[in-house]
Image (cartoon, rainbow, N blue to C red; front, top):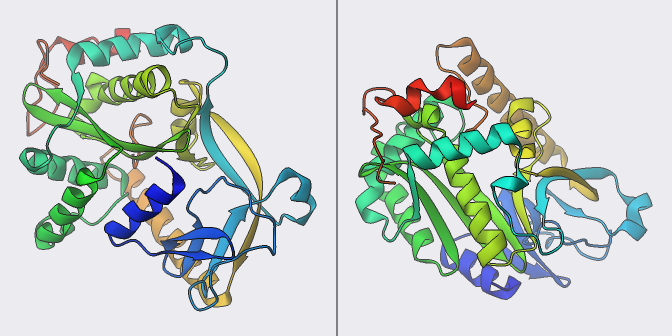
Amino acid sequence: MKEEEFVEQLRSVGERVHLHRGVWWRERAPFYWRPILELKPVEPGSSAPAFWQGVGGYAHAVPPECADRANHEMVQMLYEREGETPFSLESISGKKRNQVRKGLRCCEVRCLETIEEHFEDLREINISVRRRTGVGRPETYYTEREREWRARLGALFKLEGRSWWGAFVGQRLVGYYYCYAVEETLIIDTAKVHSDALPLNATDALLFTLMEDALNRENCARIDYGGWTPDDSTLTEFKSKYGFVARRFPAYRWISLPGRAVRGLREWRRRSARAGERRGDASVDPRDQSAVGGRGAGVRRDGGAVDGCAREETRAQ
């Protein structure tokens, strides 16, 4: 889709966006803004959010010729297509190929045709990821504010040009990737897999299938897998094994004093949640990001995998 179409879609689901001095801005945190196309460079001083909107702060990429005026750096994990060679298993490392093969054997990956019938599985996936990683909304959100959550997902699912890839074991949805293409870039917005499905390499099956479709059939020039996380080397390593590279872009950032206080509090909460999770019994799996009729595979709702796919995990990895 084009930038203008993306703007209208964001508006339709209630996101705060506005055009100011030639740039479309999107609120990414309370009163903190970035351009809708985050990697689109903006010359420092040429544009900023409207004053009454951006009281918390803003950031944007800077053109290479203005790098001397940058005061910040943006680092994104990107896969950029080179030449006409199709993306395939040969595009990734041998060890990772085995994990993809195992994931595709244990799970069936396909695009969701409807979302209403999967709400219960989606709830379980989101709660599982929250318990395992500390990332995402509180568990109680999915029951106490269930109507709001369902309405939000339903509205997103109805938007054109969005892809919802699901990993199924039998009739059960055990993981999903939500993404969309703007201009020539596919953006991975959400990636979540239930803890039960991690031994089945469901994440590998989902990511490989998504990349194969985007690069070979949709002709995307690159895939954006979100920001680089320096404090999570396992997540960065997982992405890099699929060819994602940490690309650095000079940037300009301004944050007000109240914005700095809020940002500091959010960072403290995020780190505390992660530290608490690592001290607990649950493990943080590098194949999970926050964020498929099984052929001979099954997953218990109370625990882990129940077939040979799980038992052969050591050999596959």
